[in-house]
Length: 485
Image 1 (cartoon, one colour):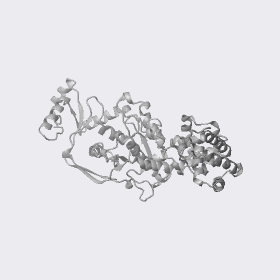
Image 2 (cartoon, one colour; image 1 turned 90 degrees about the vertical axis):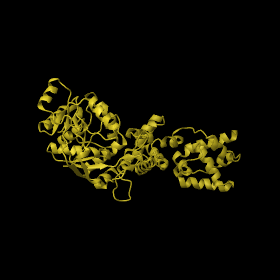
Image 3 (cartoon, one colour; image 1 turned 30 degrees about the vertical axis):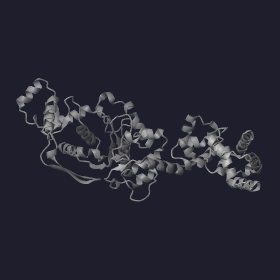
Image 4 (cartoon, helix red, strand yellow; image 1 turned 60 degrees about the horizontal axis):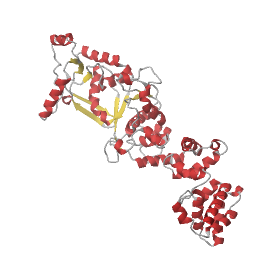
C-alpha cells in the first residue's frame, strides 16, 4: 500500500509551496488508493498544541486535502507530533552508538566555531574533523564522569551513495563531501535528519515527495535507512516555486499564504487546479480540471525537473474559469458570506428571491475574477437607489431631449410577462427610430439610469434582471433628475 506524508513545521500558516507539496502527495495517494498522513514536525514541546498548527490545518481543509492519519484523526502509527516522539528518537540514536555506527561528540560549540572560523579565514571549506570519533574508553569515561554535554554524530563511511529520483533520475553523492552529521544535539533534541527518518520508518512511508531543497539531505537519510536496516522509500523531489522574477517565491512577490488567497476571494477549486500545474503536466494541452479528474490523471512521472513560476494573472484566469463552470446555485452559496459581510444580503435571497439571485450571478460572473468582484458589480441590483457617477451623468445624461425620449420609452417597454432581453431591445430600438435618435443614445442613458455607471453587463440583460417595476421606478427617477437639471 502506498503511504505518503506531508510534514510541515508549525509556522502558523500554509505556504503555497507547502500546499503544492501536500497536493502532490494527496493526489498520488488518492490515485493509488493509498494513505495520506499529516505529521507535524515540531521538536519543541511548548509548540506541540493543535492551536499552533491551526493555520496549516485550515489551509489544507480549505483546499479539500483530507488526511487518513494525523494529530486529530489518530492512526496506528502515532503520535503525529514530533515533540511527542522525543524518547523514540533518543532510543534510535543510542542504538546506532551501540552498533558502532554513531558516536558521542563532546566538542563544545566554542571549539566548533573556532575551527569553522579558522577554515574560513584560510579560504577553505570546513567539515567536522572527527575529533571525538576515536576517543579512548578512558577519555570517554572522564567526559561522562564530569557530566560533559554530548551530542551523537553519525559515522559516515567512505564511499558513495546514489538513488534514482522519480523526477530527476539518477543522483549520486561522494561521501567525501559529507561530514559526520549530528543526530542528537547536546540538549537531547533530534536533528531533522534523525527525526524524519525514524518517523518515516515507523509510519511505513513508501514514497517521499518533497521539494528540491531537500535533495542535499537525501544521502544522509539513505545512510540512516541502511544503518537501521530498513527499506528505503522512493524519493521524488519536486521543483521549487519561483516568483515572476525567477527568484524563490517569497513575500516580496505578494501573498504566500494559502489562507490569504482565501481571504482575497479565490475558490479552492481554482487554487488546487493552479497549484497542480505548477511543475506537473497531465501530458496534454488541457488546463482546467475537476478534483476527480486531477486524481485520475496525476502521476509522479509527470512532474517536471524545472522550477515553476507562480503567475498571479494565471491564477486569476483559473479562478474565473472555475466560477464560469460552477452551477449558479453553488456560486451564489459561495457569495453569500461576502454579501452578508458587505451588508448587501437579505434573507429573501435564500428563499423567495433565490432564483433571482442566481440569475444575477449568471449575469455578472463573466466579468468576475474573484468573489469580491461580485459585490461592486451587483450593488446596483441589490440597492433601492443608485447614485449617478458624475462623469457618466455628464457624458450621457446631458442631452436636454432625453427626458422626453425616456418618458416615451417607459410606455413602450414590454409588460411583465414579456419582460425579456429581446423584447426590451426591440422596444428600445423602436423608440429610438420613432424619436429619430440613435439607439446608442438611449442605451447609454439607460445604463446610467439603471446602474449609475457608464459600464455594465449588456443593458437589455440588466433591465430584464432588474424587472419591470424597478426599471420604471428608475426611469421615473432619471426623468425627474433630467427635468431639474
